[in-house]
Amino acid sequence: MNDKPRSGQAPAGETPAADDHIAANLRNLFKGMEQEELPERFRALLEELAKKEKT
Amino acid sequence: MSGQDRFHADLAAQIPTLRAFARTLSRDASHADDLVQETLLKAWSNRDRFQAGTNLRAWLFTILRNTFYSEFRKRRREVEDVDGAYVGRLAEKPSQDDRMALNDFASALAELPVDQREALVLVGATGLSYEEAAQVVGCAVGTVKSRVSRARARLTEMLSIDDQTGEADGKVAAALGAAIAPGTV
Image (tube, rainbow over all chains, first blue to last red; front, side, top):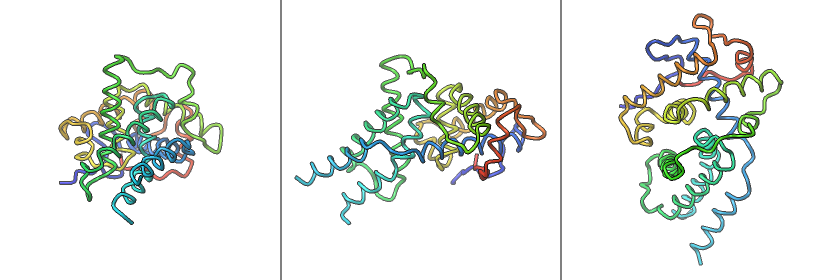
């Protein structure tokens, strides 16, 4: 069973309004972090690993 | 595209999400990037153990989380965000009010116990199901649900969200006007 939480679904004891509030902020926060520019170190690392593998 | 090239591309595509997850765990941006780098190295060297067709994101989260807790146990204490840089970098919003609201939320999130914080983020922000989150964390689905529920209750309390209107005291409500679609938490 895929017990995926759904939009608007609040756990017992919590109001949907509070749930939406937290959900929106959490996703906004996470999305903001995901959209930050990545440091060069990660791309360089993966390239180096792939290069080593081929040699 | 070879299997190796595909894995390489898939790995690269997960870096932003991995980085965001690491930041919610460690609360220190530099340390979080170190965790991501370590995770990429481990994933690459163990890629033959990844089962194609399964959830790469969940597999990477598991590696990152294990790395974090392994270090955590060694140091016995989490790196603190002494200069507040983490909170300050979390979100760039169009207005000062919105940024303050997001920072309030980020601060409250950072105050949660790490087990509640990771459960909430895995389920509410990364797109994992409760089952997948439970696999990442290595506990029962019911435990994840309980942690998520406690995390939300604590956040509601910390942010003083009104039970009837959903409005927070002061600034948090402003962030919700920033055209952010309701999430799946």
